[in-house]
Amino acid sequence: MRSGNDANVAALGEMWQGGGKGYSDLVMITLGTGVGGGVILDQKIVSGKHGLAGEIGHIHVRDEEREHCNCGGVGCVEQIGSATGIAREARRKMEASGKPSALREFGDAVSAKNVLDAAKEGDELALEVMEVVGHYLGLALSMAVMIVDPEIFVIGGGVSKAGQFLIDVIQKYYDRFTAISPHKAKLGLATLGNDAGIYGAARLIL
Image 1 (cartoon, rainbow, N blue to C red):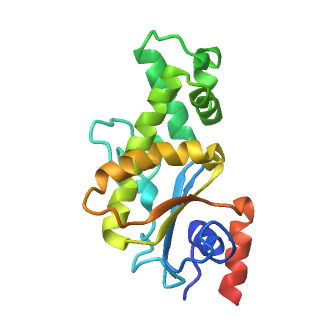
Image 2 (cartoon, rainbow, N blue to C red):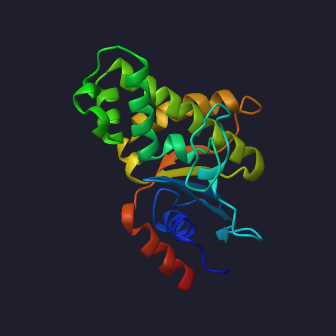
């Protein structure tokens, strides 16, 4: 097994002692300033021939996007589902609509946490933003399921601190896009936080 990137090693840690404990096949997706991913099959990191396995953040999902992602692509999951992407979606929604919202007090400084907190409180504009986010994250996970078919998706990163609220938003669309079968990977939350990589590195050594 070759050593993986941060997301792969974190995925291994979550499989061993975290949100994926008890599972041998999992895909981790980390929603932070970017979107990372790690694939573990039969308890081993899968990085692929060119290191692209698990690059869920750079799956193209949005055709109408015009801005470029950091990777050079356009319409990547990372542009929507990361903390940066959620804040950008909120700014776009505020510009496009005159709807009152608690988010307006933050203006251009709005953060993903502001959006998630407001959405949990029932703020209509914030909920609209999270529906967009859930749609595209659910779509990306449905694509991954058809290729890898893991036992569980473990969702981590700063955005995952929104907990079950985030899972529920993604689950709705994930289920819609995987109508082929009710038997598929469940969605769960990472539990190790920033320590996931440390656990993963220890597991690699062991």
